[in-house]
Amino acid sequence: MRILEPPAAAIMAIAAHPDDIESWCGGTLARAVDAGASVRLLLVTSGDLGTSDPQATRPLVAAQREAEAQQAAARLGLAQVAFLRYPDGEVENSHVLRGDLVAWIRRWRPDVLFTHDPEHPLPPYLAHHDHRAVGRAALDAVYPLARDRLAFAEQAEAGLAPHAVRQVWLFASAVADVYVEISQSFERKIAARLAHASQTPDPTALPESWRRRFVDVGRPAGLALAEAFTVLHLE
Image (cartoon, rainbow, N blue to C red; front, side, top):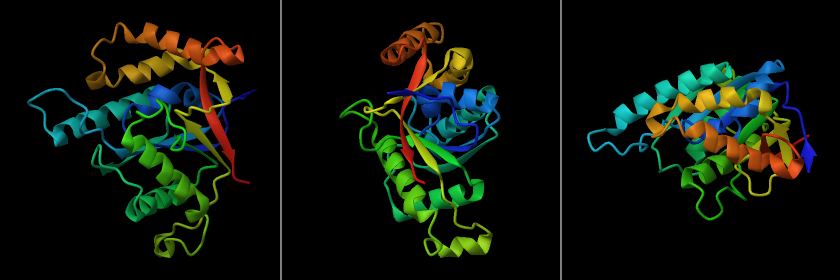
């Protein structure tokens, strides 16, 4: 078990849906921004299945959720958000997806990448299919594809040179052993999550329920409020 400060580096987060990073690593990313990091977010889907409204359509839901994601990113202090717009609920670790992720890694050139833990996901057995697929594709893109000159070599013509990521921080990890104290960024984490209004049936109850949740996360490390990760070193 380790307690770490957020990385003050060029950071890229790859997530399956709008509101994923707010749920699992928003406090850590906000603290990283405060420490001088530049943080950029790539969303593989736009969460276009995320509604119970019988009148809603997938394009309308996607547009609303993208707007919410932009607002949430501004509240966290993220530098940029990009959308791949894969269909929600249908993501596979395909050659095409890996190529898209490699291209964005080479474009943004992060030192540290945050993504879903695909091997030991939370919740166990019931982790969203897209979370597992995105996490696996992201790890495959980081190592070895984004690094290797002959992988997706056609990207060099667009000026996307190979790039080696130094660390990967896996969130929603059932074997997490790295903790980050988020007391000072917790209110911004909540504000970012509340930006996803379409996904928040009771915005008055969420702050307190989340406080209890992240008190529980921090308890094993003796922290008041925390997020937890599995950290991979690629150097």
